[in-house]
Amino acid sequence: MSQRGASELQGRLRRARRVAVLTGAGVSAESGVPTFRGTEGLWRQHRAEDLATPEAFRRDPKLVWEWYDWRRQLIAKCLPNPAHQAIAALERDAPEFLLITQNVDGLHRKAGSVRLVELHGNLWRVRCVRDERTMENFDVPLRQIPPRCECGAPLRPDVVWFGEALPAEALRRAFDAAESCEVFLVVGTSAVVQPAASLPMIAREHGAYVAEVNLEPTPLTSIAHESHHGKAGEILPRLLGFPSGRPGSDNFEFRNSNFAISPPDPHR
Ligand code: BJW
Image (cartoon, rainbow, N blue to C red; front, side, top):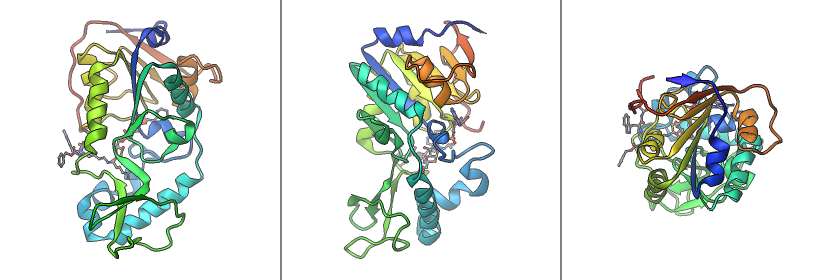
């Protein structure tokens, strides 16, 4: 059941004490960072199993690091866009706030976001495969592939690959926020990768108002109270009431009250 109408989001945000935002690769697309899925996505050129699994790294650390080195070089040139900035501004207005990002590019922090958790790690951190020690590394390009720890062991990107556990504290904070927030905003994620994709469902089940911004419908669209289809960098500033946004491109869908909550289809 859906109808077109005015967005309730700004009013909900004004009244809310607790706000949570979940972002995915789409929020950085307008900064020039490639997304994973879709026609231009990274997985069109590379199989996830060859590059983003612990098995792939054990099999061929050089190949995996070359891919990450390429992405680091690309992302090093990217700047936050109006969507990152609108989310950072939203945080400044909210008494309790958590930004939950699946992105590893560091652009939210660059835009000024402070209260955030990075569920899938960070491309600018590396981890020793021997003692698990993590450290920042901003070398672009890397001086050595694979880079090595001072103990001599190889370093790996401090990101979460398929089949690996997410950082426990980040995950705990994300679930707490989903369970307790009044408004849950989802931006630029295909919502197919678990456990992040479950967070909006959990928020909705716990009574939050759920809003989504994405270029296209996702498995979340049917459970969101409102869905906005278009570019996040154009829609979000206006939607959140930060007037630098350009009007005109928002294909807005307003969903009303009673419909069943169904789980997302991970194979979509
Ligand atoms: C725009 C836009 C614009 C474009 N404006 N919008 C339950 C069911 C089924 C499977 C599983 C399950 N639980 C776990 C699994 C397995 C697996 C999984 O989910 N698989 C599914 C794919 C089937 N999950 C895992 O393995 C996770 N681990 C785990 O659960 O461990 C359990 C465990 C416990 C204890 C011990 C051991 C294990 C780990 C998942 C790790 C994901 N890693 C990656 C790589 C990170 C590092 C790197 O970057 O290299 O994370 S994969 C990739 O997908 C990356 C992303 O963060 C993640 C999500 O992608 P995202 O952000 O949604 O991007 P896209 O490209 O998919 O979508 C972009 C969207 O933006 C699109 O919708 C566009 O339309 C939109 N868009 N431009 C607005 N301008």
